[in-house]
Image (cartoon, rainbow, N blue to C red; front, side, top):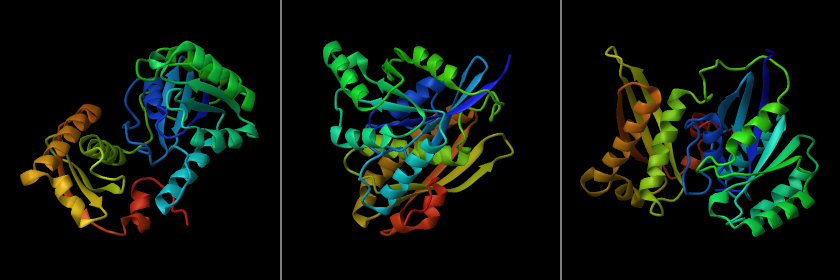
Length: 297
């Protein structure tokens, strides 16, 4: 059989469920998910297979009005991901909608030449009538080739979406080996997993001004891996929040990240974390490169 391979850009307002959908399409976790908006920073790719078709899913950061340098870099990465796509997938949360972010996105999509698919997510918690009305309204705004109703959380409707995407991919050799599910290096993936735990465990206490930097990633002779990371925060006052009472919180974060990493990597993981305060980290070019973002002035 002839191989097909193509790129699918996954875009949408923050928190629409893009990362969860990418993970479902791939069949395992490749993109970090969190209830905190704008958790996806780098253009993490998920690689999904369907028969002889390889789909490279560009899981773009939520596109929103950029104020700081970090925000601008994320937005730039998002649109870059959509440039060379064979299909653009717009994921919409019909419950929250976030129209102030959705409408500018529709404006930008109108004139794009790629084939466009509308995905209305969270059908497991949405009423049917408003869903159909929303679908009708959005297809009136943009020429979507197809509309899919899915639940990224339960997987409902995802196989049909995957089959449709596969049918849209051009003929061509696969870009990645069959067993590869992401282009994120293990080193970057490890920092993403720690960052996800940071968000999950600290919720509102820690603003999104935190980064996790890789320091070292060493394979030990016994087959395990030693990972050292630095959690960078912007203010001294955030340090006790991350450390917790007698270091209990950072221990919990490290333990949860270590457990998940050993499952993903399939080997024993020794994870060492320490906290550094750097008020200007969001202006540090080196950190951007480490977390997979371009430096945008």
